[in-house]
Amino acid sequence: MRIIRFLDNNSQIVLAALTDQEEVYPIPFKDFMELVNLAEKSGISTLKLVETSISGVTALKERVEDLQLIVPIEAPEVWASGVTYEKSRDARNYEATGGKVDVETCYDKVYDAERPEIFFKSTAARTVGPNTPVYLRSDSNWQIPEPEVALVISKSGKIVGYTAGNDMSSRDIEGENPLYLPQAKIWKHSCSVGPAIRLAETVDDPYNFQITCRIYRNNKLVVEGTANTSQLKRKFDELVSFLEKDNDIFDGTVLMTGTCIVPPNEFTLQDNDQIEIEVSTIGVLSNPVKEQQRSKEAVK
Ligand code: DO4
Ligand code: MG
Image (cartoon, rainbow, N blue to C red; front, side, top):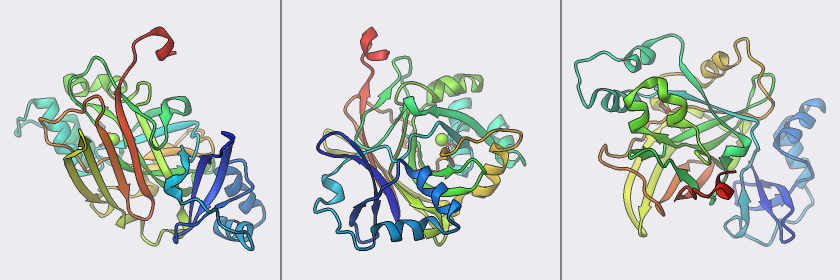
């Protein structure tokens, strides 16, 4: 069972359940976390509350593909884990050393350390949902999407859902100096999340999500890569436990869990590319890529 949000014909936000048979049922809750919290208060599972809410109700006639989907949760904060897969460690080493293999870097150290890399990624205002443009930075010449499984976390640190995320990244800015990480990671529309949240209790094995990334240029597939969460060096609970240490977690926080798909080193995103990030049993997160409009109006 998944939860989506879409805009109806009057541009009103509707929260809905999306079943494994791809049927859509509007549900009477303000947002995903209200659903989760009401279920907990009633002493039932979130799945049970969804099932009760849609029983006897007719599914929408529209197919999910025909709905105007929006970001499934307005996460007050999005955090991200880094270097949780060997592939990411090797890619970070490549950009930091210009391809030298015999130098030990901070990325080798963090991959092996007990404490994972966790960084602040985004706020609700900077985060977009499906089909909304992600932006390029104007001061970078080497930019990529990072396709990641993302956790939705309650204020008590419980993983209540899984979604797909794109941790847009600037490889040349981070490669120049790791202290530039916030600039390599955070800008307007540099984070995308969706299209749906799968209820955590309906995931049999979170270490068996299949992730696929496709990038299209002029309607031609120019990059394709796959990975599986079985390749993760860390456990999801381990990442959450470091995020919540001496920290307040806001209800509905999203934590990205790192990338294991890296486009070829000579690749950089361009205006009008199309990115698809597919996570098995969750869906496909599609975003067009746009150069930022530099007028004052556009960057407000
Ligand atoms: O240290 C840089 C961050 C790496 C990252 O975002 C990832 O591995 O996904
Ligand atoms: Mg990342």
